[in-house]
Length: 367
Image (tube, rainbow, N blue to C red; front, top):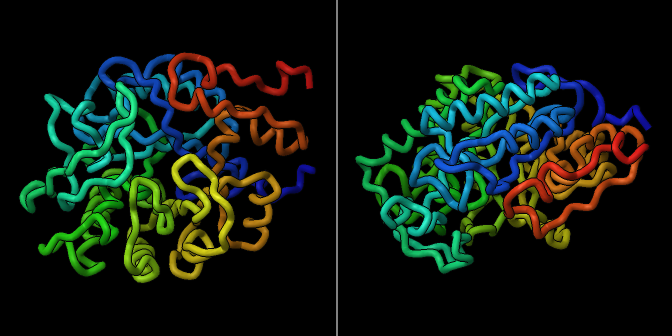
């Protein structure tokens, strides 16, 4: 079946895409020394260049923004050079790639930070979950609340990350404001209990995200910036007392920037785990009547589920994570109704080629 809407060309912001399959941003913990992308990363992304768009993995905009071992950065010249080999490899294969700009905030861990420093956050509230470190999982520490005078530096780190991504040859960037990381921590009132202009009302809690978006759009222009939100995810110990009001405000406020897309994580996804479908929570359908631009939905989709959400017009594009991880030629497999490779969960965050660049394409299987 080749007449699927999933496989049809479409416009996403400033890009023309050959299909509506987006490769979701996937942390793989395989950067080299100095958090620099290396040749194996270029191979991995180039293998998946048939995606309508690749959204590169969460990439810290500052040294204290790292949340897991061996994740890449975009704050040094060496990292820019490392990413250039990735974007060149993808473009040489005819692909398109955005970079996801990220700051982990309170879910960093002192063992990952320079001189064991304390992670930063909107408020001194520890995440009630475990941190992934080089020495296994450890409890999160109580973070240090950012002083009001420090917040402009966070905005500038995202701005510089956007500039560096432009220099590295990306086609655009996605701002990570989901999954319990720093910008999401400011948005949701379980983690933000400030009393200044960045806390309290939803307008104040959304202020940092909107200022970051403004800064990044000033670098990239309209149609080349996306934003990721997870209004119903409890991952990294997140919750909001009124998510409908919070995320309605955010989605409407984002309309002013001419974004390429809004990327919504569905309620059934908690981190990299798919939970039982509850029918409750906020996702693409919720944002459809509020956000005026393109919507990307992510949520453990199969081919059939992705096609259905497009046909009902709840979203414009479908992001696939684990299926793209294990099937570098996913669009072709969907077109041929071919069997899919099974992903190996135990290699998601390991090192080396296994579970990374060794998943076979259809041609190598003789199909």
